[in-house]
Length: 178
Image (cartoon, rainbow, N blue to C red; front, side):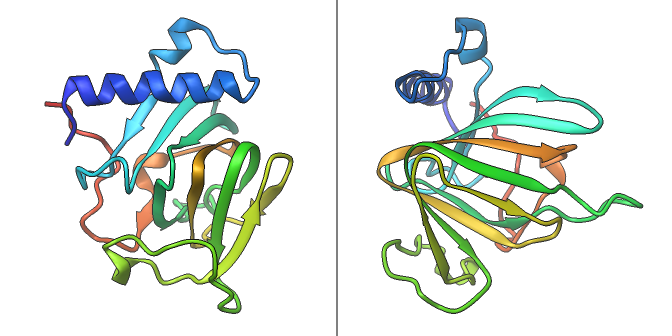
C-alpha cells in the first residue's frame, strides 16, 4: 500500500532514471509509470517501476526501473490455457543488475531481502548496460539493482502481469493507493 505522494514521487524518480539512461519519454508517459510494491508496503526494498510502451495480443515492450538495491521478488510467468506463458528478454540499459535463476549456487554480490524464505534461487548473473537474458515461459527468476539502480527493457510475448506467480504467497501484483 502506498500513499498518492509516495506513488507520484516514485514515478518522478523512475522517469528521471529513464531519461538519464538516454531513453526519451514524454511527460504523458512519465505519468503512466506503474509503481509496484507487490502489496508488501516497502517499495524501496521490494518493488519495481514499469512503463509499458506497447502491449498487444502478441507482444509487449516495457521499460523497467529498479531503484538502488531494489528487488523484484521471485516469480515466474505461468502457462494460461493453450498459451505456454510469457517468453521475455531483459536488456540492461543503465546501472547494474543482479539476476537470479536456477543453477549452481554462485551467489556473491547480491543480498537476500528480509522475506528470505521466498528467495530460493542462488545462481547469480551480473548484468551491465548492453547485457541481456532471455527467459523461456515458466522460468522462475528474480532480480535486484546495484547501488545506483538499474534501467532495462523488457521485450516479451503477450504480457499478463496480473497472472504472474510469486514464491511469496503474500504478494499482490496490483498496488493499492491510499
